[in-house]
View 1 (cartoon, rainbow, N blue to C red):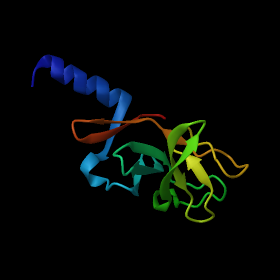
View 2: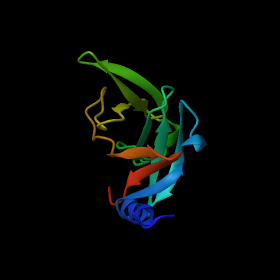
View 3: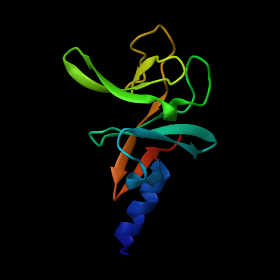
Length: 125
């Protein structure tokens, strides 16, 4: 490994943490993960987009969001990916965390990227 590559890996690891291999996430499903002392929910849509959010339901605090129902909605002419809480079916945008069908707190969402077959999430997010 060249010195430049090593420096890049060190810099990336300080800004983001690898969560899992992208192939570990099945299209249309979520998985729970533990990162920096908290539970997060990771999602891969049928279209192959990746998202991360809090595993805690914003309304009840139950750790269930990874088992939510992935879907989508059209907002102002744009298609957005969504997750519905499996407990009470409140629907949240996966890009912003805003609830679309109830007046409730937003779902915490986190920036993720796919690099070299791995899902990375910002550290400290």
